[in-house]
Image (cartoon, rainbow, N blue to C red; front, side, top):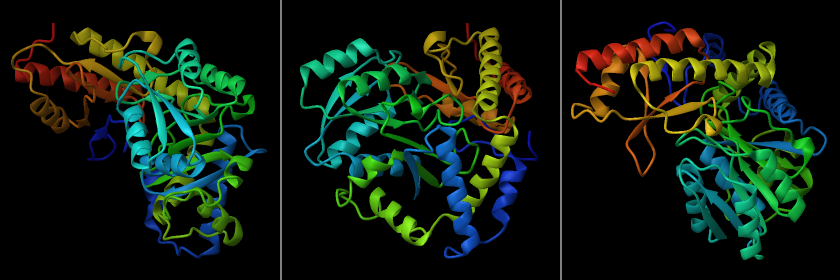
Amino acid sequence: MLGNDPILLTPGPLTTSPTTREAMLRDWGSWDAAFNRITQSVCNDLVDIAHGRDDYVCVPLQGSGTFAVEAALGTLVPRDGCVLVPNNGAYCARIVRILQRLSIACVELPLREDEPVTVAALEQALAREPRITHVAQVHLETSAGLLNPLDEIAALCKRHGKSLIVDAMSSFGALPIDLRTGGIDALVSASGKCLEGVPGMGFVIVKRDVLDASEGRSRSLALDLYDQYAYMKKTTQWRFTPPTHVVAALRRALDTFFSEGGQRARGARYARNCATLIDGMQALGFRTFLCADAQAPVIVTFHAPRDAKWNFAEFYAAVRDAGYVLYPGKLTQVETFRVGCIGAIDVNEMHNAVAAIGRTLERLGIRVR
């Protein structure tokens, strides 16, 4: 455990390093030139992580990742556009709700919660609905930990001339995303996920020409990506009060990210965490919801025990008392709970967490098998 705080085995917020938290001890003026240089350096580095420096820009936005997703959809999709949303989880469904609120036409491609998107299914949807102009794809559906095949989807969109907006909330920084291969117009993520910053800043990495074409399109003032970008380009400042401490913490987290070896190293650590977690939980008798091919190394969904004594709230509280914060299930069909593998943690924390879960099961008298 890091100090006296519990380890957050959640998809975000997550456990951050002491050096990242330390970066928030200084106050910054929102017009201060030094702070604005930090913002610019953060944006440059975020674009570089996705290999998009020549053609893409990063637009930061106050708020959670959902704020940035809504900003991207509301700014980049024309009023006469139509968005295809492959739906295999709660965050895909949230995109549908956003589009409905924005009165943007959308076509939903329903999938099971354990079923990744396939190119064949997308091909069929595009053939059925020629009015589709955009695809909004969740790369890693965090409600189950399901990984969708982004490279194949991007290649399909490029081939069909469809604009692809990617929710990379829980994958950016941990899994490889290369904008140089084409097919992706915009990529959305946030500070409090695999970059191991603190929550409070979303961002959209978007093709410069796509963003330039979106002037005046947003249905919102606060969530107008183009206006935010144009104002920052002109003044170097945020339009409205920036989350200064969040940005400073993200700068420090990015420094750590690069010093540790960047995306490959971050992804490898998370993969080790995930394997350790699954092995330990299976030894206790738990079953994963997803098959290995669909499982991303970010968060793992486990079937709840069938024991009549099982009560997630009691289980959660007991495990938290032991120093680990788990996450409830977000699936609609079966009872599950989730355990995250991300944050400033390694396999030692995963071993200790599994041991704490095992002791909790014993104390509560819950049989898993």
